[in-house]
Length: 101
Image (cartoon, rainbow, N blue to C red; front, side, top):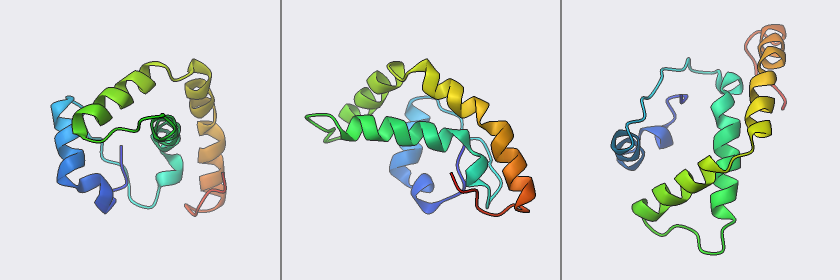
């Protein structure tokens, strides 16, 4: 999922998604607060960036992301899923506006 942001549409990102067989899902504009994957990407990115030797090319980035993905705590994923009801309710209350989280 993405919010059609320019950074999500770069050739590098698209090549990475294509090479890994990851299917891009359409996500309505102005609704990134409802995208649980944003929280997962953030956690994953922090773990990769916190390595002693951060990735320096596409192959090492893919390897690092895959290794860190496999080690994401199940509790993190459960928390993101369980937060969806609250996010949807908040989004409805704010008439689609930004959700403070």
